[in-house]
Length: 368
Image (cartoon, rainbow, N blue to C red):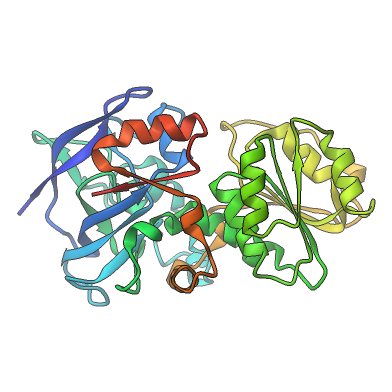
């Protein structure tokens, strides 16, 4: 039996979101029907909506969902109706990387999450007037009042925590946190640099503030975001619109360079500056994603002192472990995620898009 629900549909690349009635398929084995309470808006959603990624359109996006389970399909026993869940990325569960605890590097990650638009078996989860739409985005397509989600996208969470306060954990926040905790793993006295003070960068700053790192340097071009970074744990800030970034980082690191750099901007010139700012044996984590095929020039000899450049997807997170821990930190006030969030009614999704694109809000969260 299908379920009719209201969704924000992108009709074609560059078109606005349009509210429309759609039909969700009957929950298949491994599916869960979730009533959405909140959903974060992410730059990846905007990139796909603009036509910058080959996701099948018309389609339903959304990949930072939070809601309550209403029904489950065959074989789903660890979540049930009434459970509060966050929705994150999905994975196959059987490939080597999934078995070793790195589902963000699943062998089938791209078709399952970003470009396929359907379940792994090729069936559609959402249609309109009998015509399949692009769906199953990150295993969820949560820009809708109800979503048919893949079980491996679901993380059961504490029902006492308001879902609108933790929805962004599904993608952007865990990406920034994972860059610091899972890749850089700062030691006592480490110096970290975060390039870009958007949602991912500020999440990295908050994560770094919970480590033994003693210098946390946030870089951006907007003074108000740098002020917020200081309030969230940055010990130093650099306004790249007012000073030379390389000179500023050299001064702040006493000429030794940074032990870790998180690059969130997607700007290859900034990435190059981050690589040049590394200390011997330092690591640059590349999070920001420019268009496919983008290349960056590096000084090879500059890398020989043990420097590493590491790409990152979704914080290299094992969601069933990391997300509940982050929810608890939010609940205890140790991860002040609310400082990043602005809420919008679901019907105002296009206003949220405009505000995010203009930099008026850091992390829009749609509420249902």
